[in-house]
Amino acid sequence: MAMYFNLVAQCGYEENNAEEMAEHFRDSVLRFRNGLTTRCRCWIQQDLKGYWWAIATPLGASYGSCIEGDTYLLTSDEQYEQLRDLLYRQLLSAPPFLCASANWEIQDDYIFHQGNPMDEDYSFAEFDILCGDLWNDLQRPIEYSFFKEGYVIKEDFSRLF
Image 1: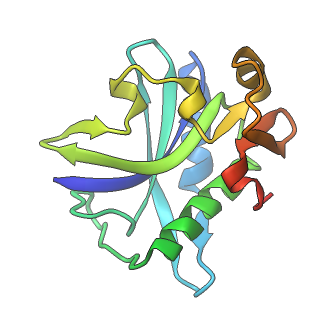
Image 2 (image 1 turned 45 degrees about the horizontal axis):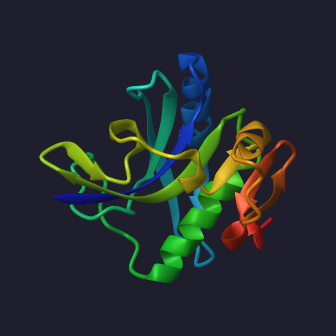
C-alpha cells in the first residue's frame, strides 16, 4: 500500500486544458523554507463524468511510492502544510481550472480507494479552491474567500494569499 500527496485540479471537458495545467506544475520547482526543493510528477486523467483532471505529485512526499526516483523526504506535518501552501501558490499563475485541492490518496494494488475524485461521486464543495462560477452554483458558501481573480479558497487557507 502507498500513500500519495497530490494536487488535483479539475480542468473541464477539454483534454488540452488538463495538459496545460500538468505542464504548469511539471516545470516548477517547489522550495521549502529550509532550502529543500522538489519537483512534481504530473499526468492527466479523465473521470467517469467526462471531466479532465491534472494531477501533480511532488516527489519525496509519499509513503511507499512506486514512482521511479521517488524517495521519502518529508518528515513533519509542518512540511506537508508548507507543501500544500507551495502547491496552492503555484495555482496563482496556473491556467484556468474549475476546482483544486491538495491532499492524500491511498493506493492499494494500483487502485485508489480514498480521496481520488476520478473514482468516486465527488461534490465540488469538498474542494479547497473553486472558480467563481462553481462557487455561485453552490450558492456562495461563506467558508470561501478571495484567492485570485475569478477564484475563491476555503478560509482555512486564505491567510496565505
